[in-house]
Figure 1 (cartoon, rainbow, N blue to C red):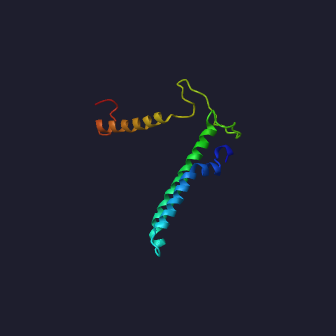
Figure 2 (cartoon, one colour):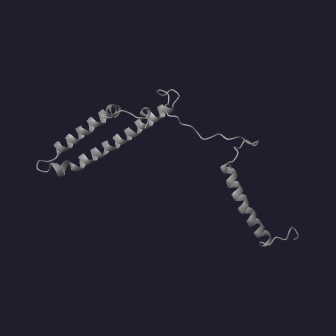
Length: 136
């Protein structure tokens, strides 16, 4: 993977420092509030909930940092030039109707299938499926 589309661990740490400290303070509060002799039973669920919330925040933030770094790599104002030699497929030539040769646009493909199925149904409905060659 291109280094310009990665974020640093320090960026993640810096962006989550307050949430991390808040979560640890909540863990400490939960454990300290648990009755003596029942510390685990009295705090386990609270600690689990706090840590589950932190885990979700960490993953969300990591995904956001990744998305931001990928976006900036392709942005006109993004850092540096891309070094990978990436090319698109050949353009082909344009026909007189503005459609690339050798390819049928999706709208025309869908319309041609629909028209073909409707034509068959109209004939079958009009004359019982027998072609009379225009003599009715």
